Amino acid sequence: MLYPIPEELLEEWRREDEEAREIRRRHADWKFIEKQPPKIRNALKYYIEKGDERMACKLAGLSLEDFEALRIKARIPRVS
Image 1 (tube, one colour):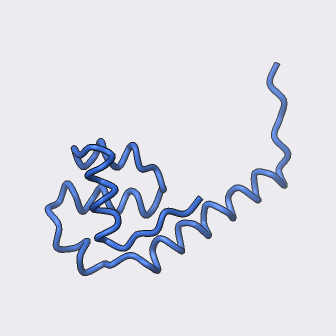
Image 2 (image 1 turned 180 degrees about the vertical axis):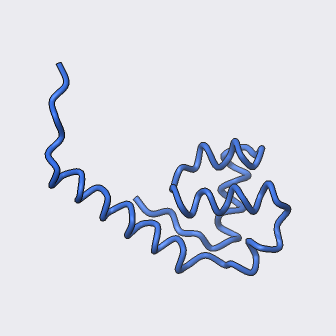
Image 3 (image 1 turned 45 degrees about the vertical axis):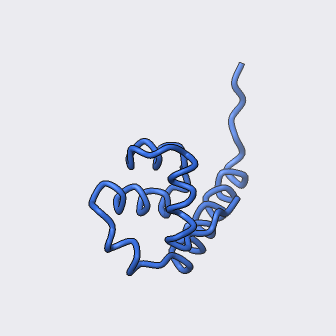
C-alpha cells in the first residue's frame, strides 16, 4: 500500500532541487560549455538543470568516467 507524501516534504524537496540547480548554474563555466559540440553541450546543460549524471552520460554518448572529467572541466559542481 502506498501512502501519500506530505505536501511539506514535497515542498522541501522542490526547494532543495532548486537550490542545487542554482549552485550548478552559478559555478558552471558557460564559455566552456557553449564551445562544446551540440551533443555534449546539451548533456552538460541537462546535468545542470536536472543533476542526473547517468542520463547526461547517455545524452552525451560518454562513459560515466568521461562525463565526470568533462563535468570537472566545465566547473559544474556535484551537489547532493
